[in-house]
Each structure stands twice: as structure tokens, then as C-alpha cells.
Image (cartoon, rainbow, N blue to C red; front, side, top):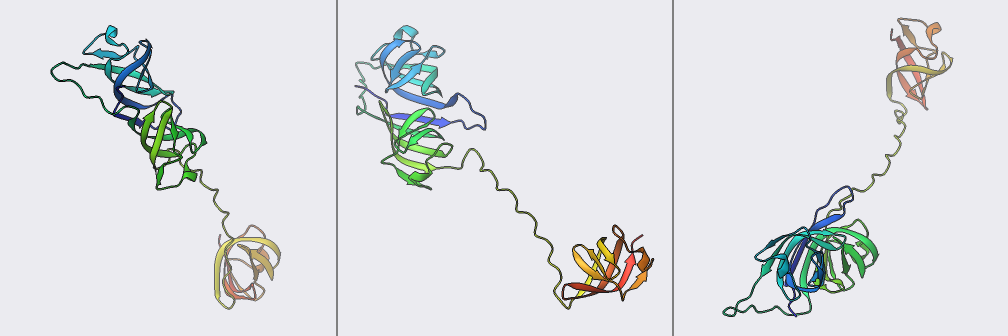
Amino acid sequence: KFVATLVHIEDALSSSSTSALGQAEIKGVISAFVSLSNFLVVGQKVDASSALIEDGTVASLINGATVEVKGSVVAGVIRATRVELKRTTASSPQTPPPSGSASFEATGSVSSYVSLSSFKVSGVTIDASAAIFKDGTGADVQTGATVEVKGTLTAGGVKATSIEFKARAVAATPSPPAPPSPPSPPSAGTEFEVTATIGSFISVSSFQLSGTRIDASSATFERGTAADLRNGVLIEVKGLLANGIVKADRVRFQR
């Protein structure tokens, strides 16, 4: 039995879901030929109904014919864009590669995850139960993870020998920003100066600016008088903070 020696698939990542998950190129012997749109190469289903046939004709596609197929992977089927017939001659016979398996390499997003021994990349079923993991562990294999898979293609899928984790195709959802912390009042015994709108006004000795209590009973007033103090008025206060209360020595109205 003559099978492929190399299968290389590269996933075309996209933010939107598409049916075509990658580009593929395989070389091997046709088997299970039913029609131009339904035959196998290295156990991989191929649809060549829209393909360009090189070095042969459609009639040349029969069981036992050696071909090189290029196309895109759609739901696990290679939609061929080109099929090249590979011929052997009596003077230079072609030596078949070892039978039973073929090398496989693909980079893409994990989908249809069931377990470490059953998930898909580029529409191909992967068994990574015996794989070596790089830049991650088996626990990181989950739907949406971007991985590079290397292994052996068999009739049932790919037996992965190594899984390397790549950057994810979809960015993680950012955590909501934490609410801003309220401004800390200046420490006791320090000079205090603020320009703000009066709030929580009770009297000249009890009102607030930016959440800090103000006592202006001993203050000097500029551009106004104590009678002008009320909620909503914009003032500049200078004083000394003591025990959480600012003893204002100057109040200037901002008119």
C-alpha cells in the first residue's frame, strides 16, 4: 500500500466562523474511488469536482493512481483546487514510502473538544493523549485554544506526538475596572488648600468641600461674606486640617 509521506495544513484564522478551516497538500495513492467528488488519498477524503487536473485527465483518477492534491479543508474534506498525476516509469521505478501512516503538521484553533484524545484542528480529528506539550499542558487544550499539532496521520485521524500552544485567536474578556477609590484627606496637622463647590451646608462652621468638612467660623472672607456661603457656591479655602476638620483661615469666593 502506497501512502503519503507528508501532510501539511495551515489554518487560516479569522474572528468570524468560516467553513473552510485551512489549506492542505497531500501526496499518495487513490483508494475507495466512488466519483470525482468522493475518493480517498492517505485515508483523507477528497472532492476534486472543481479541481484543475495536471499531467492527466479526469479519467486518470482511479484506484491505485498516485496523485498530489492541493486545496482547502472544509469540514474535514479537502476541496481540491489542483490534482497532479504522478507517473512512474519502468526505467526509474518509484519506491513507495513505508505504509500505514504519514507525517502531519497543522496550526489552528481547537474545536469539537471532547477529551484530550478527541478534538479537532482544521477539521481533522486529533488524539493527543500521548503527546508532548510545549508552552502549556494537557489541561490547556480546550475549544478556542490555538495550537500547532505534529504527529502521524492514520485512517482514524492524527496521533499527535507534540502540541505547541500559540497565541489565542480570540482575546480574553477584560475584567471590569475597579471603582475609583475616594480621595484620601490630607493627614492631620497639614496645610490644606482646595477649590470646590460647597455641599452639605449647615452653617459657617459646618459645610463640606470635596467630602472634607470645613469650619470657616474664624476665616477671613474675600470677594464675599459669610452670608454668601450656601450649597453650590464655588470657593477657595485655605487652612489647617486637624482631626478630620479644616479650620479655614481664608475663604475666597470664585465669581
